[in-house]
Image 1 (spheres, rainbow, N blue to C red):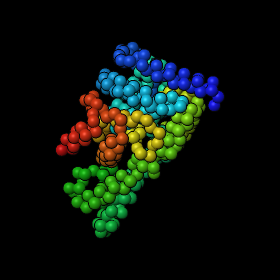
Image 2: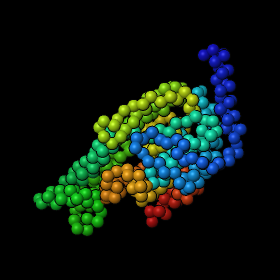
Image 3: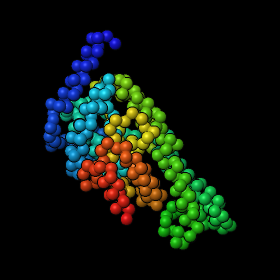
Image 4: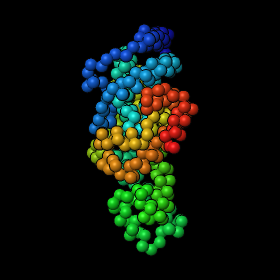
Length: 331
């Protein structure tokens, strides 16, 4: 790189830092047009921004700016990656959209990437694979414990057809079903959020391209049908910040993230939010509730990596305080 180019780079870095400093202390403004706020790139996703989302985003944003300045300064292209993670019931998509809006108002170009596009399978096939793994693991558990005896296959088939083989209430009627459910849940835990389910490698590659100054990156789009999978070229030439909104954004397999933000939620809140957004066809099923419970465990295990943790009531939490709250919720 020539001296002239180096000076240009340095000036660019100073200018971006100044954009932030000149706006400090940041003062929130009323949003006149909610429809103008940027949204994530997951096809068919519904974003409903409410006053509670605005309140939480306004608490997060000043802290985020403090973390962004050194992150941008460390990258030669003045680029940083922010993750907003948590169960969908906590308003992950909505808060990511508000953060994007506030950054735009400060003159910091950004893009919201939805991590849900990076499963190996389209949603309906991934849902089927989750159920297949649960049921196969459950039957293997019955076999290994000597519980898969004559006559139980027919009973289990009937329970499966009703969608209640993961329903804990059925254990009272069929005590052996507890072995099936426990083994099935263990098998499901070895799939959910792992490299078997998610293409962390592809998304890590996109982050690498972004942070290495690429101006045009092809991003994946995924609907629910076989024909709803394609790539769009996205112009990043004027983008300084990539915002990834995704439950698994704080996973160790995702490399290159600068600032993970964890939004705390309970499985019940996640379930209610999925219901309002029509995220799946069997929202109230025992199996969906099991999946949400496992995902909550994943989020808790990853919490130590988060740079910011926000409680449901809108408080910034230290990790030790987060753990106390989660223990109390389980009592």
